[in-house]
Length: 486
Image (spheres, rainbow, N blue to C red):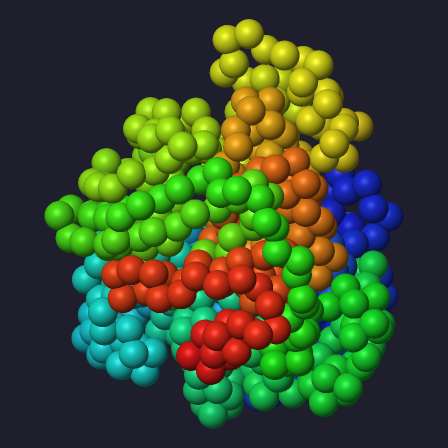
């Protein structure tokens, strides 16, 4: 049993008076609890209180008591807590210590001084239970985001703790991987484990969660059942900053299709990786202002397609034309700009204003100002980019593309780990860019976001294009079949 009694906590140096305020909470053994609410509401901090990272690793002012089975977490050594509480972080790379998957999966057992025979036996059980035979003996660096998430989970599952803490576990997963995660959580429930999940994409937990804690401004505002949350009106749910609990209830809007002449033309594009064909005979035309969602399961070539558009993939044949002129790889680099999933990796300067002109031989600070004003980030011009929020960093990268006069923008999972409010802000950003005539490609597994932002869908799979259709109620069944039934 987990018990919190009048717990308040403020991070050291935080501008907020209290990150958590007067939390009273009891989580029973074998209970699965979903923590939801807007970003910054205190979900992750609450989980850190249970695994001891607060205040041992994240210092600050803590009052009240946190107990597991009657023992104070603060007074329990971390190595003892690790046997009871297993944590899977949003970014699995932050908890990797080895270069191969098998070593990573036994790392926790090694730290608990298990015998070699016991470790071998448990490793085999873990691989069998989680059905990850294809991940055994692999290099961690060669895994996809979803595969890394599975290995991180397996390393915790191997030591069989009584309590599992998962922070945004679905943020990097495609539809199939989310279904696999749901089955794994069901397995843990069957084993009688206690599970806490901090999550924004909550639809897959409708039949898993026993109880839902809605948090706001560091406080627990409501206790809900999944049924109660499903019965909340869409207006009230959106005002709470929550994603949908039922994807089948999302209505696909009627979008006025653009009638402009296509400006981007892709003909007979074939892509390979190490002489293995990834995509073949891709044909596509796009008009200015189109927002094209690129979907498909992991490994279907979405990232390869994105790199090829940008001129970053060498093993390719076919033609890509812009305004009737064929572009070679070097010329495509001048027309395209990719906003990475972890956008912080492509920000380099020490102020936002300098970032907008970084690497440009003749910086145009007036153009930088105009771009920042259009995107609503001018007030942060003297701020270091690394201190911006995730959404602000995305806008910073877009501002750079505007200053560089790039016309084709590619976004890789732009809503990963975002709450409802932030998802809508990204959607509005895309509408702004669309009005400027930009051609936008969005690689995403986020069904809610696709419906709210995109005007067209490009479905990749089986080595080619499985579908290319407009976003409309008439085509909604195709999209629902992929995200809900696949």
